[in-house]
Image (cartoon, rainbow, N blue to C red; front, side, top):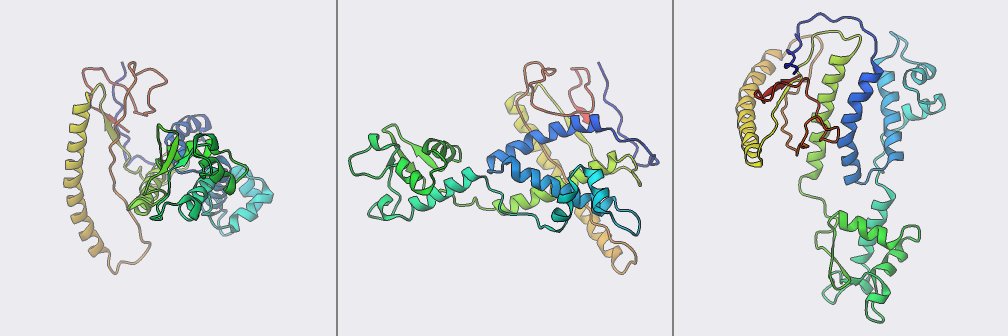
Amino acid sequence: MKKPQPAADPAAPPGAGLPEPALAAEAIAQVLQPLARLMIDHGLQLPSMVEMLKKALVDEAGKTYGLAGKGSSDTRISLLTGVHRKDVKRLAEAPVSTALASPMVSVAASVVARWISEPRFLNADQSARALARTPTRGRAGEPDFTTLVAEVSRDVGARAVLDELARLGVVDLREDGYVALKSTAFVPHEGLSESFHFFAANVGDHLSAVAHNLAPDRSGPLMLDQSAFSQDLSPEQAVQLQLQARRLWASALQQFLQTATVAEQRSEGAEGARHRIRFGVYFHDTLQAADPADPAAPAELPTATAPRKNKRKPAC
């Protein structure tokens, strides 16, 4: 059995190296799994994400890999990224689009909007009335869900829209064949905007630290990027470890903020470049496969595997 590998020395001198596309692809494939889940949960589809990835490649190539004093030509950016040269200029000048919702989400939202605003689909108290799934399941003359969807879009079937609304938790599918709209339908969760903001900041900075550490031409010391993991835990013990992790973070946070306050005071009036830092922590709990070596197990990427008797393992 392999023993845990020692953490890399942050003071180790940088050295030139060659890119490792195969290793990078293997790691990125695992990173993409939770990203794909996030995309599906929030209605982002492949075409819009491909456009975002192209723009990120163009922007990063122009910003980070420009020639000294010259920047980067469209041809050089195209060679670095694989983005077609005709797209480079367009993407370099284009803002990040915010209209990225999938067609299904757009249709579903339009269906709900019509449901809560069209008098035919409302009760006397102006609440959304329950609708029969199809005309044959309702009473004669009653509006039904299939008709509602058809009035919004002829391109998407009523069943597909109903499945999406049910997945989003927007409707109740009743046993009598009717569909009821929940009162909180399409109302943003409290604090959701802030949660996405911190997701972008925290995960973005973490990945930036990883990219720095793995850069073939890295300059400067390694940035902190370590974790510890444990396995073969009962649900109760997993909960206890999460509580312990929160307690440890609260203590570390207080100490770190005190030090950061002093650092900010000492930095006042100092000349030269200014740095922004982020120090964070996370806790992840998931079911593991019966066989930890099973490739179908939840994607975890520890640095090494230790003997079973020593389950608490540091991972780089």
